[in-house]
Image 1 (tube, rainbow, N blue to C red):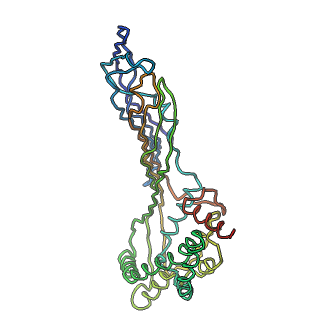
Image 2 (tube, one colour):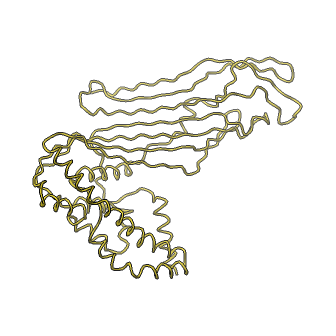
Image 3 (cartoon, rainbow, N blue to C red):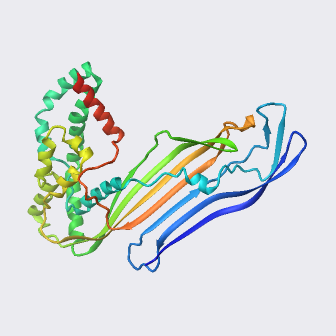
Length: 374
């Protein structure tokens, strides 16, 4: 199968008429464009999941002012007529500011999570063993929290992050446990012997302030607006699980939902600061893979696939010009959209991870360092 690539740019020839302060009439011809697309896929692909890569860039440009006041002499003004649209750069120029896809390591981590989710007969809701062990320590948490808050903010934050927050979260999950387990059992009984579609989704934003400066006759700045990233994975499950009914079925399901079938994860969680190792190695994925499934029988997920969708928006402003009234003008908005789809799941064969720490992990790391220095 040959890879085919198709590209298209929507362009129009336009003319801007400039009547200068000095009495000249100038017709400035330019190529106006507002959309650029590129699609790559394969010819004659009969597979159910067809790999594809699609990138689109759209730029609805704003209107150029009807006149321009000279920055060097406010009494001098040029007037404009005809096609008065801002066009600050060619598609190839703007393409340089397009964000890239997530790193292969990040995608592999998401694929690990998807594989774990689709492999679980009954997902774990609560780690009951560690919950009960932590319950014995709740009595000391209140005075400890008060004492730590009185001494340092970092100490109080750590007490909340590792004491109260997990405890409150587990309490909420325990309150809904019976319904979620019975719903899962009903689903397993209804889908036994049939092919059903499984899905996994993870989304994240990246709205940290970000700007790019460049020049093209005038000076411009791109300012990050909205960002949306979505990773999806799926497959077709066929299972013939047994012992799904009666008291035995409920006991098996509850044991899995309460984390009693994953002793390796329980041991790992009890090791102090094991979560820090999870930031740099795929330990959670490995302990999850050691989980014992509660029901005997076939559990086969086939025709797995993954996709990534990205939407990024930048607002563009004029930051410098020979015309004083151009400065600060909203020139337009540029939208980058990316979509890729591939067969199978790109899980990593590496034990170590190379992704950057998230903002939440950085806060925890800082709090740990500050507390350790006290």
